[in-house]
Amino acid sequence: MLELKNLHKSFGSKSVLKGISASFKPGRVYGIVGENGAGKTTLFRCIADLLSFEGEILKEPADFNHHLGFLQTNNLLLPMMTGREYLRLLTRARHQTVDDFDQRNVFDLPLDEYARNYSTGMQKKLALLGVLLQGNQCLILDEPFNGVDIQSNIIIAEIIRELRRMGKTVLISSHIFSTLSDTCDEIHLLRDGRFVKSAGPADFADLEREMIRVTVGDRVARLGLM
Amino acid sequence: MCIGQVTVSLPQVKHYFQLQKTILDRHLRAWKILPWIAYVLAVVLFFGAGSQLYTRTGFAGYGVLVMGTWVLSLLSKRERNDFLSITFRRPVYRKIRLVENGIILLPFVLLLLFEGDWALALVQGVVGVAMSFLRISSSPTYTIPTPFGAYPFEAAIGFRRFWWLIGGAIFLLVMGVRADNMELAIFSYGGLMLLYLMFYQEPEPPFYVWIHANTPQQFLVRKLTVAAGYQFLLGMPFLATIFYFFPGVGWPLLIGPAVAALNLALTILIKYSNFPHPLNIIHSLALMAGLILWPLLLFLLPYYYQRALPILAIHLPGVDDQDHTTLSKLS
Image 1 (cartoon, each protein chain N blue to C red):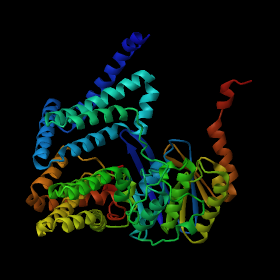
Image 2 (image 1 turned 60 degrees about the vertical axis):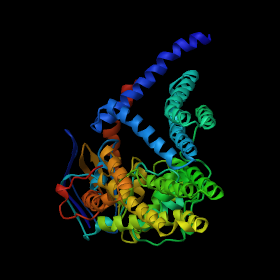
Image 3 (image 1 turned 120 degrees about the horizontal axis):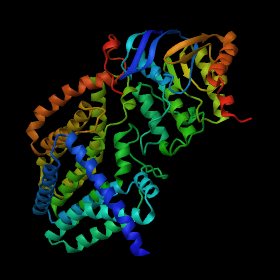
Image 4 (image 1 turned 90 degrees about the vertical axis):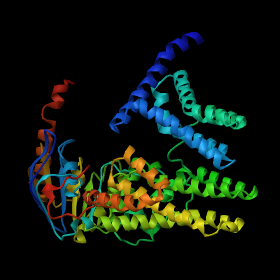
């Protein structure tokens, strides 16, 4: 169980999160959607205890963080480390013994090549594979669909559904609304540091319309293309 | 045309090096050292250490050559050179690379000349010019096999980055055996162990600590165990060779691996006592003290162990779940 109570986060005088409250339950997939700079990554880093914050984050069980997987937007891959070694490092760090990496390499990555030489999409897939093989109970996936080819997007969406069936808690952020509406049970719209709207599947279409209305506004007209 | 190019490029080259000096001075001041003192100390230490090396072994010249080449390799990194070649026109870029290699090599060449190693000084100069044309990729396409891949990552990455220096140490060992020079053989082992310490000095991104489901104590014990195991694996062939070919060396040689292991522990503890920031001048001095004055390790090891624990508690997840609001996480 993961619950946020009145979460605030500031960087100097700049307030990024302004009182976020939400509850995330096992067996459900939550989407966080918002513009660049809305605070999605900051929120995730607070949950992962990678940033200090004000407010409260309740986590159960006590060793919740030891079962938390975090796919970051930018993967910090070390030089001259192969994909296989990266996966080995991640799984061993969580006391998982995984030997059949080739069998589990669902994205057909060249595991014996240096991960730094992978394309952006391949690096993302490697990082996701690592987080999945750790056997985490809660997964934070920051932009899992970004830079990934369409075939892999389909696989990732199916993996997320499987994680839900397994009773895991999944938090996803994405700029692409359709990828969230396909996989999520609940979507929170994060704007200016607050959850301004939360919707279940029945209201996803309304939420998307609301997003378009606020995001696009009169911007296209202001271009004066006509 | 040629004269015109020179007059146009000289201010750019000058500005580049002035900027480098400004940046270096900033680093030194950040370490609370007056730049001119650092420069004088660097010269004195370099030539002092070089003279010491020459008094201890007849193969010191090769060591100086390898060291100089290694320093040059740092300037030859592909990312850095790509940036310079994009930023400056080709003739300016070429001049910058030649001049900076010249500046770096000057003390090495002077030391070699001072010690009468004329041929090696010439080789060092030629290497310097050649390496100004070289771009070394930090992540080459060919995967270098490593015996340290089972428990990533420091030893595996270090082996791949510095395999050629390990090859140099093997060369010195073979030379020592062939010339029946026990000191050179022991020097090659010492050099190898110093190189191995370098694998563990650079802090990794905090994510690579965060992923561990360990307490700080468990994390350190695990890190130290793997590091010491691989250190033993790397050094054992050298030790076995020395014992086999120089049986007279006796048990005092066993002090070597013990001291190497303790200094490795110190390196790791110091790194995590300042994590995720790189080592500062105080840490470097502590490392040097551990290498030179072994009894100090008895004080340095527990001291930095105690310093590393609270820093790791900040970066490891789940060790202080009780009070999130007062946590001061470094990002």
